[in-house]
Image 1 (cartoon, rainbow, N blue to C red):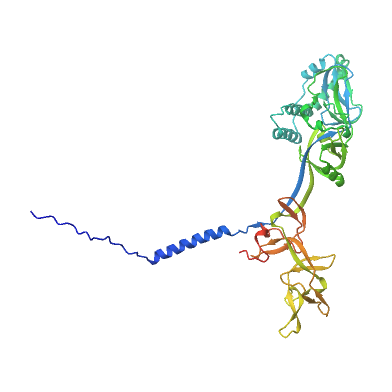
Image 2: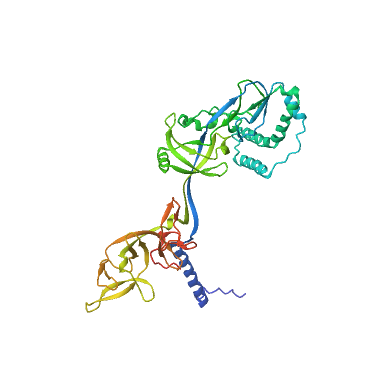
Length: 468
């Protein structure tokens, strides 16, 4: 039997040689380049453009004011069932019929049995009705359900306009019924004014009587009179506002009150209907020493005759111009050159005649084109780019031997325009600004125009830097 051969013990593992090809080398190079570009782009501060557009920048302050009017409450001379004939918010003349008092209640039965005819709301009345509904829906607060009752009586007063004409005709027919005429008391207005059907105890309030706790309307109670059918002698039946001049009193900080008083007249926006008006402002002290501002109006009293608390906005700044971000604004220094030293080049460009020295030390003059960034009308001086000139250089007056040494500098406020692909400074005239935006004057000679592109972050670029 043959013996089995042993395998040799000197076998070594074969190493496969590294086989590099040109494709792999290119792939690795591209990968390294892409990774480098990614990291490089993360280190670069990106320059974002901003398109200049026209706009406004209003600084508004919202307040709830207490309305103060010349109001007089009229009380009933007799007891009985009341029927109102004048619509709430309507002006009545002296002697106009406002309401009737029926001592027996037979007038109500008569009116209900009388054919009131067909009625239709006009487009204007329908628009007013819809406006009240929409205003109530948007302003409704579930935590303040009492406003629902105010809305109810406001709608009732508006609907009274529809029935008012035919009801008046039916009441006039009472003259033909001798058994009713003696039972009804026709109550007429003793003076002219705006009639309203509510009281709150503030009818005799003056601006100086207002205190800080009055602006908390949690304990405020407004008594509606339209929902009352039976009255007794001496009960309040309606109220007359007898003067178109009225006031709003708002609580303010001391410095705000002084500022408003200094302005004298203030623009107001009423939040109820977005109506804008002007008021005379005066700083006063309330009964508890609280600083208040009294805003006096000579119009729109009838619009708010049914309101004691009126929400308003003070429009203190309403400038209109070019709207730009504050982050785009930068300061830059310029050399001041008298206007008589400015001249024009052969191609019509602006510049100065600069005095230079040649290699031999001889003086000669050369036209130097410079960009003009502003002109001071008062001092007759141009603002020239500091990069084009040097401090101590001499410029020559055209057609003269007089010289001027560059020595004075001044700064301008502006932005970097990027319409030409590089950061080009443009001077701006700021009308108003807040923490985020500024309104600058439009159509200026060395300034911006609508739809210009400026650098959003001025700190990210240098003057004359190429952007794209």
